[in-house]
Image (cartoon, rainbow, N blue to C red; front, side, top):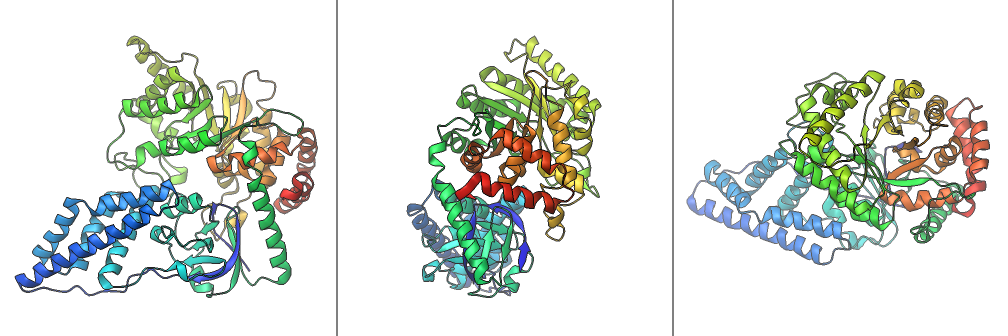
Length: 577
């Protein structure tokens, strides 16, 4: 049976289920009466903290990646904080309570500092604190940590929520996949899984109660589902798929220094999606053709006050200089929906994804918007920087945004601050109305970037993170394909203008054939996918892809489109598909 979840990625896996339970038992608060008891409790608290710090020190020394070293170091700094220890001791003294109560209360307060609002990104950061809290409590109770050294065969870890600490273990050789009921792509578990190359699927409700220990399951992290009750035929097909995936991965090293060309030498750009400085080294390492989407919101989210212009400028300048003339497309603040800041008052909305967000907020808050625009303009003096407006739904919004941009230019010019006066300006095509009038919009901008994640969910009216209806969310929906075609066609014959794509569709093997055939110029994907996309494109003949696309446009259902592209992919990718 197939269970749909949220794509986390990292490939395919086959293995036996190992259900892990890291939940803390329900505990009753203890009351302490004497000074002697309080002193003893504080001494034991210090022992617990020291012991957990030592655990993280050992994990850091033996860590297999820099990401894991950094995470262990973060935990160590947190637990060595004098203010944290003092706060716990004060709770014990003032409330006459036990060390576990003190740990729980103080760490909860610390987590709340990172989770001031109902925000997915900030919530995931607070989950790190929860993981440390649970480790402290388990240590205090004498409960042993999950021991992966007992594993002797290919294993899929299954849990209600996989704590990051499980993946810090040095005994993960037999861990081939991860399945979790809770978590998202921004969680430390997802980041660690990506670093370790472990295929993962999150967001499958009640899956830890549905599966049984030891049963064989298939994890497809690329497409976001798992399968159980496998037949011998299923298993043989899955093993062949995994073999081809590994073969493809092994062939990617050779793509690093090759140009982004189709089989018939048509030049395309394979750029990266990025959000902060931590990703810069990765995209430089794979020699991307630039950054097709810089998500500025991550510079705004994890803080209590708005970033200053100089801070934003210095981040953008660093990227621009390091890219050494390659394009850096900076998307202006895409706030709202599930991305809220404590210092930006959007208010409660019945449907925030259709509400006051992104360009809508910025146009109403001109001075706030100009801080970002000036920072981008200043960075444009140091490289090939472009500006991109998100969530555009009408021509009027483009007019108004450009008016504010012109004001920002005049302000910099009046102070003799250098910037590129001819900076290119583009828009995201993620609202269906923008796709429909793309032939009008292109006359006012220099480029489009199709954001398929939102375009698809708005077009087919499906929350892509809701497993109940996620089967309706499809790259292959004929309505979506027609909107993409119209957008790309509107740029044809427009000199020096281009259209790119920065959604997940740009990295999908079947969709890539379709997009090459439609004439997409730029594919912007996660840094980890750049070499794979470049390899797949190198096997596609653009003329053949165009013929395939023409046939796709005659098909009537998503299933027909996917089945046909799957058949053509077998011919094009051969042993790699």
